[in-house]
Length: 253
Image (cartoon, rainbow, N blue to C red):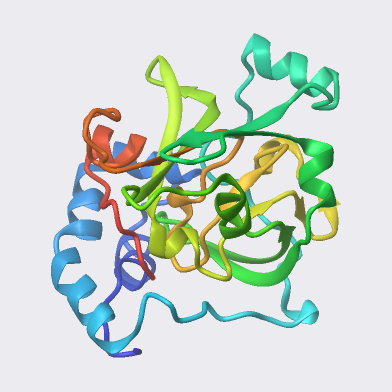
């Protein structure tokens, strides 16, 4: 795999070397030249990646002594809306995760119920589109277990996440397909480095889809919907940044 030129390789060896120092994943949107570098060869790279690996392969996992001393935040650092601030003040006592769309049994799962579910712990590397990475320990229930409990219908192809943070006047949203949704490392993380998620890292729950870049790891998740198509969701490209500035929907690494 070392011979494949990835977006991260280009960014860290080229863009950062040229002095493009960014403060958050969203800042990449402010650099048109950087966007062009990041995504110009993506179709070729995706084909190479998929030819040499499988979508079911596991992302690398690390030892506790390899964890980063500081795990930076990516994207929004605080939704800071009246509704979210109320939830924080109440320690998410009345928060619930809504699971719906093409499912047989719509669910409303409280934070206490999520914490009581069987959980997976994994130490993985987060790769941000801007070029930085960090290794952290995540813990939470498998997304696949929740989707199985809801009874995803055969007509569903994607899972859409709607979040508490607002972008461009609408809730932030992202999506993955069912292959990634049922991947054994795809979890709804409730804890980072053995502590409950803080606000900056997506409290009370965030998606971890370990074989994709950081902007796919939706924070502040409020709602999950199984859908047959991404048409009609935003501009139909699958996520806020995909719609807004042309990030690729599949951000495999």
